[in-house]
Image (cartoon, rainbow, N blue to C red; front, top):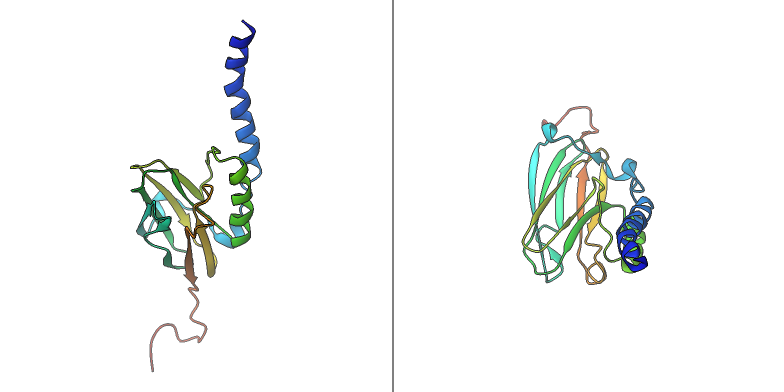
Length: 167
């Protein structure tokens, strides 16, 4: 009977540990630096991203405009689990170290999606600041192998006071 109650308690314990582990990065990303979760009604563009077992994203360099809300449709055409996580370079490196110790960690944050082989997921994200936003697959070994990308967010300010017209 004792082993049965341990088996019942084990999933709850693992779930709470996963929640605590994800709690160290849930909301731990710097929304100021990378933007914020977007509203589906405000999506201005859809970007298709394919993740493969050659440990690359099909769209590794993406251009966006400040204020733009993008729906990333992320497809895993590989045979192993992949993910797309938006963040700063430091956040991604720190999170990757946690993932190496907890490879089965699941994510529920708006800036990331974990996708099983043959499946599709999505991220809706608004890019609020000009600059760069990194993204990567943080599954153990994938980040080190170069499964990374970059979103270049251009400023919506023209800076010359004349708008976009030419003289």
